[in-house]
Length: 261
Length: 203
Image (tube, rainbow over all chains, first blue to last red; front, side, top):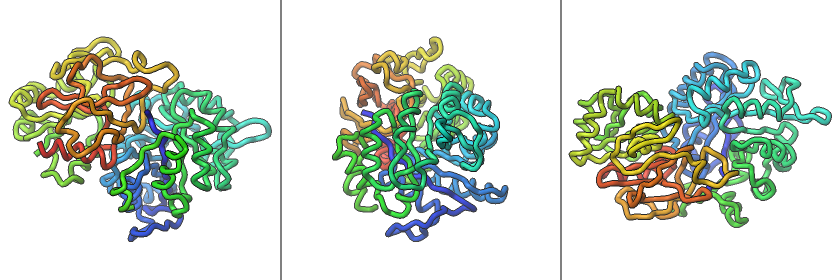
């Protein structure tokens, strides 16, 4: 049986992971390389590396770090941030990324999704959408949530899937950072509308939030979070045990591996 | 020395990193028939569509040597589309001839798995061993590996060594003598995947 995936997301700026990280046994807590290795061997099912650098110089540093990090990550690796062209796809795939996540770049140039899917396959293209309620509607936002595109979220996501996006990361701006649980209403709407994997993002504050997510919405395939994992508030191995105890199919790592985490 | 066949499909970065991580004497990316002859094991990777990959392999100038080396009992491991290429034929967008190293054919998952399940079959799923294999010597029945595929090996008879369940049994790994194939990606399957590659590297 296919398992539900737990995905830590690392924001990288100028070659360092943003947000303080607190893990016993890690020498350099903001090193993408060390964190990547930690998550890869400690039960994460996938990793997302998000480049939030603005400068071209920072971008070069990101690709160098990505290459070094990818050498010790043996789980699927998705890279996003600053992906605007097929050359950007090529750039991060050559550094060891398995999937590439598009957001603002696809909003500016919607044809990018189809072009990338045709060249690299649907499974390689992840459409990441920042969605927020505006009145009674759901709008897609661009530029890291700073700009309301006025586009209807469902319409945009359906367009993305029809164009070849193999996976959707749905980030609810309404629940993001609030730590009161995932946006179940928004996730239900999207997961019923598409037949590709949907990754829930935004709002996880504790392990129980993942249990609620997968119990309430069996069509959601994965849960993504950043700070609760980085700050050690939720340990992935323990989260997996809790999901397992609640009858949710997950990949458990063995005790020997866990003891090293 | 392990040769990873580079015939122009997909990125070989992860596979090379994996072999480096298990401390095997090293894996090289092979572009020439000569490199395949010198290697003592061969890995055939692959992503994308069967027809295109098959044509590229045939046009790479390495196929004849690859088959020759396999006949000399050099171990071969096909991964994902590289496994599918080992079969007799594929029905992905038309009908294409495979290498015929393992009996069977490649058919759409949609014919096998119940409607409503998402395709591709993407994510971590458990291996169910159907036969003993030296490829699995360091892992256990029930261990999880990472799959991404829309087609699968069918009619492989008793060459199937592991299945996985996705609403129906799906071929996860095959073996015929010195020829092995994994539908999943060992290079993306965490410690379990590394142990499978280690077993192969030690053959």
